[in-house]
Image (cartoon, rainbow, N blue to C red; front, side, top):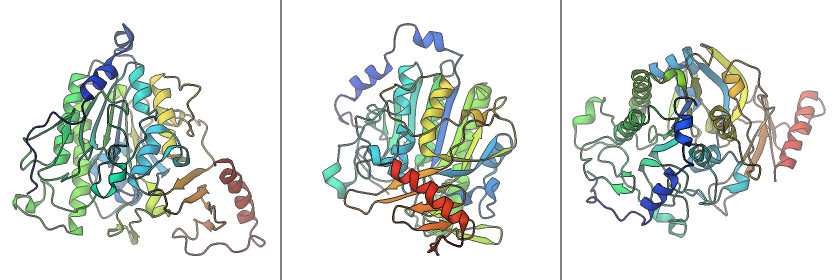
Length: 438
């Protein structure tokens, strides 16, 4: 059992003042926006690749809630993240590629503008629950401790989070900070349930106000341990086992279902854009099946197994039911989609790399991107990996070109383009992208 501190009010002096400032807005703004602008809920699972959802063809796991959201909404075939958690979190929140603003693992630079800042300033209530990992809390990285962003600095009015300035258990007997105070009432509680409970309370309290709820989940990251629905949950001690990953995937789906049920109960579903994705590929110890095909997790790698993530969108009455979108999406696209959905202008002096996919959500062609780009390193001093890709071709900065249609595991780089006009054209096209993003 993880030891827990008594209730603390010394978590970063000034959070209360910062929260108060974040809640301020021009007089009458909240009233003018009440019941008019759509709510936005973004749920992002941890270490969950494309192959883990039934609606994507998985035969290893049960995900009935997400499968139903895909059936009644839209499923995306080509959504790509960064290979690892913090790089993805920085990118999705700021709408910028990592070469512009990524500093180090566990860090979001305090000077960055996030989607929470932009929506919060326009009158949205903003809340983040789940896993933070952006302040610099890892003991082995003392040189970065405290050099990142608190939830308030990142634009959130409220939070219920694991791994802000300390890192201990996230599942059974979790260490969780709620609006600046560490909770001391979580013995035998399950962290993902605590996060979800706070999210449901936020939805209840803000039902008459436009809101942004960001839920970067703790599930399905290792250690792979029982959930409250596992028979082994009643035991005091659990030995991690890869076999529990399936339970964790299903429990993740159950929590999504609790969010959906609450929105239904409050009568908010038709005014809420609900999005679900994963922050990177599945852990490399996990093998999943899609029928006869075995997919080995690729977290931390730049292959499809490390960057191809599930993406489901649901918005009754707005998103056409049962649609599958084949357009390319990357994590820079979420911020401009949120601002367009909310009717918020992006400041002219703010660089963004994404493009809104709101038109596609509404059943229109939109302006699909022709490529996605990745600039990735874990920490300063690590090798930088850069590539540009489309649905078929992938070109690395090193010059290695892969045909993902015939070689999805990137085992055979194309050594000569002379006999392959498609490869030659792809190399030229993608090299322009690489040269333009420096």
